[in-house]
Amino acid sequence: MEELVEYGKIISSSDKEYFVEINRAAACGACTLKDSCSVESGKIVLRVPKGDLKVHEGDMVELRIPKSRAVKAAFMVYGIPLLTFIALIALGKLLDFSDLASLLVAFLGLAMSFVFVHFYDKKKGKDFSPKISKVLKV
Image 1 (spheres, one colour):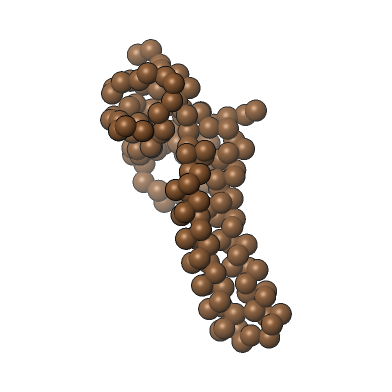
Image 2 (tube, rainbow, N blue to C red):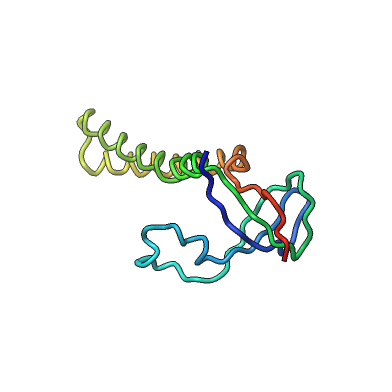
């Protein structure tokens, strides 16, 4: 199974997670839109659940996430709201709602789908988080 690999530095930790700083340029390196993206380069901080490895503040680590999980996470964040919006517009047209009423229902459904995604993330979000696979020797 293919995995996305990232490298970062542990900057702090809490009881349940580590805060890992990675270089945004490295995180965007595989993206096809990297040359036309308006996201500023710099550092980003990821929240990584604690695992079996013992790491300390300042350690360089390798982070991995299976591509299948990354695709599922992207579908949850983008696909479900988009499909909800399209389905509700189509349903409104099938039920002979006016264009404005169909659009309002679709936007209401879109907002509700974002609320669903938010609560789903709170419950299952750690399943989609990167995992520390090893501590790098510096």
